[in-house]
Image (cartoon, rainbow, N blue to C red; front, side, top):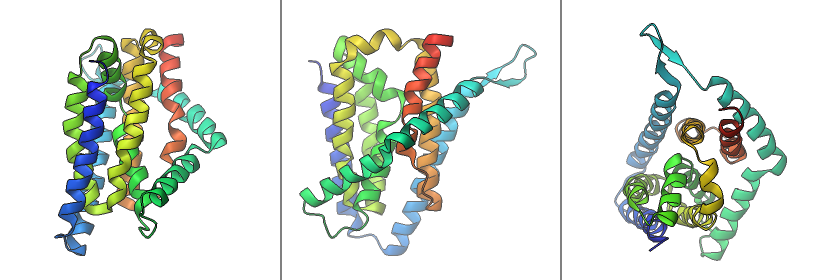
Length: 240
């Protein structure tokens, strides 16, 4: 049945978040701080490894060479400019604030940051796009089921260190992947092999930025960089 993978993924994020919040009751502030650093390191290395996997290739002389550099530059510059003009980061934060207030978590000062960080970590990436298309058109939820297992563990650790806001990352996962499934017939033709490779490269760069925010407590407005994913797909279809 179409949608099974997305439903399972949403449930996995919610369950992982709940388990993390329950575990946090027995975690000391010192351990919570350590887990936060560990989570930042993990997300940074996930982003770096995914980026290098797409950028590094074996050249004609047998040495390593890079590919996709201009695509990444153009995608990030144009995408970030569009995101800043649209203020997507503010939109996501306002949605997080709305969720916080509607769910009775108004006293949780870390809710919005936890929600935004967890949402970006589990939504950005090629697995969400590819898995949703396969789930809708081929009735094959295998990619999303694998993503569910990964997201459950990631969100559980994030929730243990950041709090209840991570649980509600299940909402944007459902909205994002559900929208792709509904539009899968339109999206599939442009999701060529080259487009997915470019999407994965840029997506992993954004995941790296999320890790930097977690690790160094910086404020990179990653949500404003999300249109770079669209530019990357357009680049592959027009110039790939």
